[in-house]
Length: 115
Length: 113
Image 1 (spheres, rainbow over the protein chains, first blue to last red):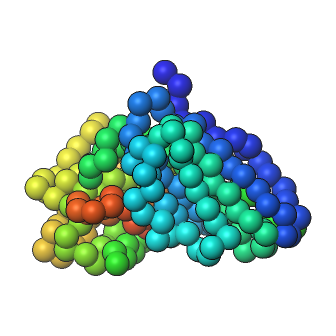
Image 2: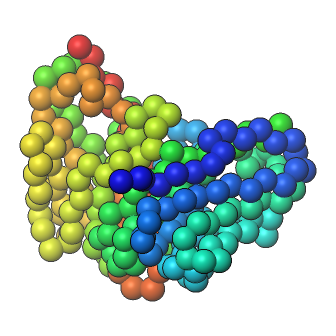
């Protein structure tokens, strides 16, 4: 079946521009995660949804970052007034349930470059 | 919060040798430890995981060991092949409240043919 998909795969933005990154999780997966992966680093947690509820957003680096999952499936990560330090790969992952030990399936990521 | 340290950052081996990557964690409540493989430009993929009620788990050429007392866990790859070359990430998770995994910084494994 289809895995997690993300769009766009690459995004170049001018500093100050707003961007929206989309994640399509595996159908029926309850949990959805967003991560930020800087070059040469491991994924850093941003936020987590269980269905449409955003249960944790403690990893969002500033109030310029906003995520939503209004119908409990597709999610959008929005970054307002982008800065150069926002340049990174943004990974989305989904898992079937909400418990520990649930395998997370990652999307291919969106590579964001802010000039 | 949880802190995961991963070593080494780079590991170079000859084809057929074994490779070992080690991670330590700080939160004794962590109870699930997955390992991911990420090839260049591709998504991380789960290769093996272990829960805190198990000390060792093996799947063909890969194995993971866990020492809860010392709070460290390791990935072992035997008979390495060039296609094992990738970045490997460990992670530590705990139950309760939100499920937030903390990842290590990654190990770049290079297997020379």
